Length: 130
Image (cartoon, rainbow, N blue to C red; front, side):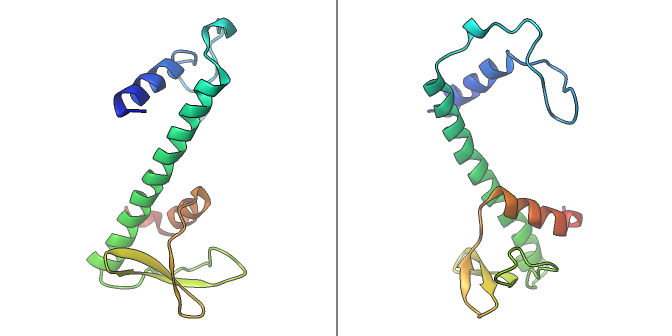
């Protein structure tokens, strides 16, 4: 799906929801919502897949922007005050060959996590940086 097509799909989706959020950022379906005006399940599943990839890419850029600020701009390791996963302690993030890696308790470099849970973990720990 092209960028323009995806933007149009988002606009079309928004048509079915109230303009103002009910609470937080949650918007409800319009009171006059017409079930016959929507497309097939496959159509929406394709949009979900496209949006999930955009979210993954956005999380990577979000994480890199934080790690870049700490590791490059401030010249130090990004040290975790609280480990991300209890079964393995990850103590720092560092840049090697243009890519950020996590160093585990055994000293091995691992690729950064790209999950929503990890991005929220980093956001909570270092929200004061941005």
